[in-house]
Image (cartoon, rainbow, N blue to C red; front, side):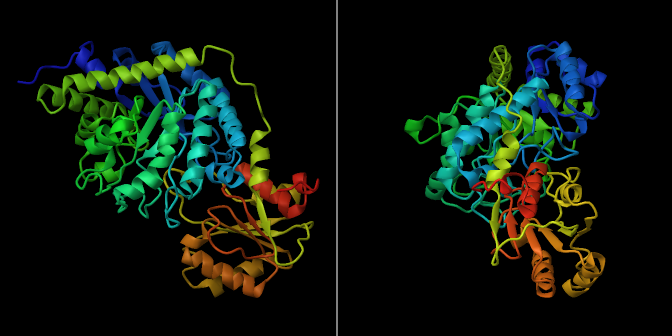
Length: 515
């Protein structure tokens, strides 16, 4: 007969310590506070938990009332992926915009200000930055979340981001190891396969992670992807070859020599849950070398936490997971929680409230086959909207319609999706032209190169209205089209503001700044 679990057991406390669960609501539920008292050492926050800075600070204060040294984690990349500003859009451009500017001092300053805002709200662990090299333009989940397609560029900005974030007392987490950029599959839905050989892996994917380790990143997040050249059977999150044999191994032995916290990507993502199940996936991840298990993007209740806790305890008792490995993982979690408390005890970073807009302005690229004349009259904005990936979410608004309507009252807008294009681009464009009337048209696209329906519709629109302005708010992979064409390198709210300034000749564009 199985021995009943006692919350005060060291083994049970260690099992709780390695979990990073989410929850629902904007205040901490009673079950979560109880688990913190029983050994839970991390809590994961998502957009559903955040309504504003004051509420978030109250929530983190409530959590620390139950456990003082606590990792409060969040997925705040800035740009398209924001939790602090999930309902309004981020005040910071994302990685691709920073990579387009290619000023590491700017990247460091943006990350420091973002870290300062997190720290002010009581958040001390950020699952960022993305250190992925976006080498596959068809990548559906990384894209603008990457600094770019060049390993050296991604490496120097990853290091700068880590330094900036941690200078604010917030632990950074380079992700998604060993690199999610060369995939055309979203691991939220399925298991991606990266066919690169080990030489390519070392010369491309691993370059930014080496830079992150050298910069002192306190954590690395694993990727749920299969890399047969490294391990033909298990995805990186569950692979001893990836975690022990590569990430942890000494540099002299060909590894990265990382000695900080290894945290999994969301264990409930289908790349793991659909193949291994979350209980077995959790055990295998710990055995492979992970120290913390992120869970809660989709699963966020007491029963899930208890299932994973019990699975770990059972695995130790049945000899599937060495007790020393679990104890080491728990110790690493607690050590990082202690580091954040010490690092955040000094003077905070000086506020830099304008840094996000300054960066977004510098990332804008305007191309026009004819001299650009600023838009000065009400327009009609047609937003061609692809399906949002899960990392970004569909709560966060994007596009320029709201900002342009603020600058030019009378501006109208409509959102179009692939379903609207089902009858063909001609029918959609006819409806669009009727709605626009005599107003100039602004077409807003996102990753035009990845969506044939969008490209076909835009082509038909430009044939009918050659002077349509085009704003690309994703990866500007397709050739520039439109009069003018504006690339923002991201869809954050602040990128929309910078784009409308360029379109209307206001802000930095009115001042003749070199953008």
